[in-house]
Amino acid sequence: MQVECRFFGPFREDVGERSVEIETGAATYGDLLAELENRYPSLGGRLIADGSLVGEVAVTRNRKNIRHLEGPETPLRDGDVVRLTPSVYGGCVTTDPRR
Image (tube, rainbow, N blue to C red; front, side, top):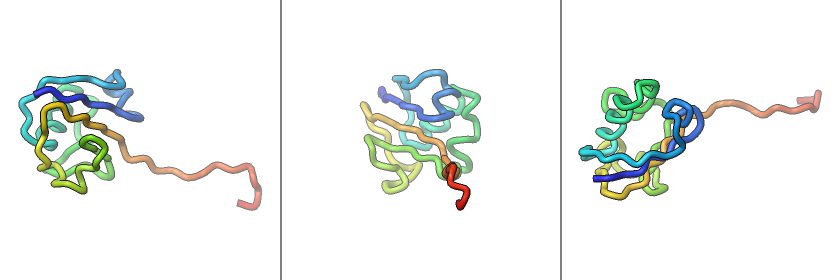
C-alpha cells in the first residue's frame, strides 16, 4: 500500500523532506513508525519504543491522533496521510521586566 508521510519540526530536518510517499507492507501505525526509523536512522528511538509512542510525539491518521484511535495498533490503510510532529516544550519570551 502507499501512504504519504508529512514531517514537522526537527523530524523534517531529520528526513530532509517535508513529505514523502512510501510503498509499505506495514499493517499498523506501529509497524510504519518502526519502518520509518529504519529508513531514516536519525529518527531512531524517537517515534516508537517497546510498542508505544515515544513521549508526546503526535502521529495522526488523516488528522486524527492515533492516541485517540488504537494507538500504535491503529490499522494502516492505503492512501492514509500520516503526520508526525515531535514533542514541543518551551515557554514564552517577553520583554516585560515584570514577568
